Length: 92
Image (tube, rainbow, N blue to C red; front, side, top):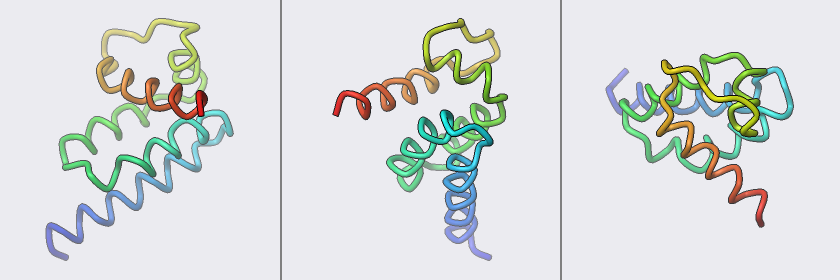
């Protein structure tokens, strides 16, 4: 497997994981985000997405909805990209 194939497989796996979270609400947040962005992401950006997706759905949904403040270990800049993308989709 070449490096290009490796990142292609990784992108496909992340898109699948984004759409199959376990809760429909997070599927609808992360799925469209992954569809829109994953193909253009390099390894570093994919690492950031994977780290965010490693969080459990209940707290992640509360952070996206602005109901709770994420802990310090969460990549707030990347979370804000996800939130902004979600809000833009809701506004359509």
